[in-house]
Length: 125
Image 1 (cartoon, rainbow, N blue to C red):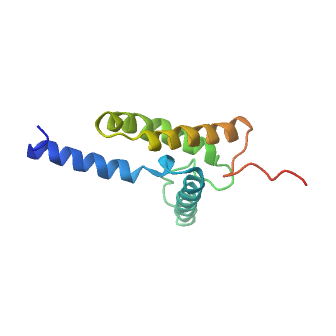
Image 2 (spheres, helix red, strand yellow):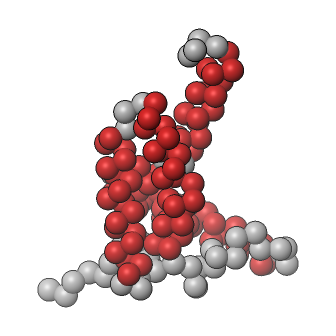
């Protein structure tokens, strides 16, 4: 069954797609770093579209109003969780799924505190 060309192609496509959306499955510090990078890319795109008077493709990524925690929660809910759950049935991904769960809780915690950035504010000394 796994040797059938169409199944091998499907497996390869699934691996590539999982790799493409894997940021929330990394350890927390790496997840935060990649969330910062992708957010900055999207903020810049939105600013460029506005500057050139083009239609804004991702209006949620306005630097002044965007909630990064909300965007990460939505991304995880919409793209990542179901795909990785399905992939876990095929390949053991317990460590990645644990990171995914921890990171989702991290973003949820920031969102519940109505924070829009990547990290909670530093505690006063």
